[in-house]
Image: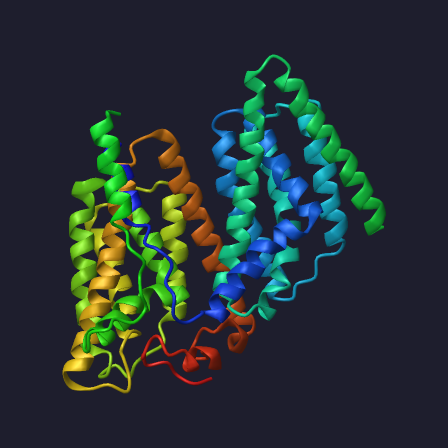
Length: 191
Length: 222
């Protein structure tokens, strides 16, 4: 463990001052901010993390592994110009359904959970993918929004740690309810 | 952890000085440019990261031969970049990055021969597309040496990190990161087929890269 920490720290050099890589850095930043700037994305991704934590192993890590890949498929559809009707509706529905799953502490079989999450991942990916061609650096943009999405999942998993406390589970379920309610709000906006 | 060990770790952390982009000593500029090249080329970087993660998952004994194959192929690619016409291997690297990322996500263990073949392809792809332009003689050799060390050390470092991370959460994080790299690579591959000019792949590097003074590389104009 000490060797691991030492090696990790050695890899962290200070800032490199000289030339700004506006294309790559700008692309990464815009990609990173894309999921975060949209609250409908944020609450749905947090709900994935929360639900995965509720489902326990292996869902808690399987969903964050599978989600980006399925999202990439949806993104590829967006990039290739394949229309996906009702993308914003799908994103709003993802918040409603995933929030509700957390609120009722649903524990379906893993394949059912993966199917639900995967279906909605396509909508989220399509929304990100349609903006990919306009990015300053497409690779950096892709990495940015994939990493931001993953970090939102992680935040949901981190939030679920409160279940260790006496009323933690109720708090998490209440968060799920709030996410579902916000999803209804976004759905009315999308319609 | 004892106080002595904590101080040891802290001392190591303080050893990481700022990375200045240009060295004040003549001749090391080209080396530094060459060493930086794999890190400022997005396709190269994600391919190296994905391959390094996958190597680390194979364990110490399983990573040696593929890493050696990578280094040998990288050296060959760097030596032959001119003879090969400075090909643009970004699409090739993205495919390799996607495959390696998927392998990492699945924690796929393969025979060392298959991993070595993969490493050789990756090394060759990085080497062929990393040739410096506008410099000749010793300066060119120095830049190529820098690229060789930069890319090889990057792979080895990532592999070492993964190998040392024995805890469950580290293994899970590695798999998650692998899926991220695969997802990003797949998206850009889709873009490269849909809109090659905008993807920056397949020989259509954007003008901003040509104007970037950090790296004197054989970019091809759009």
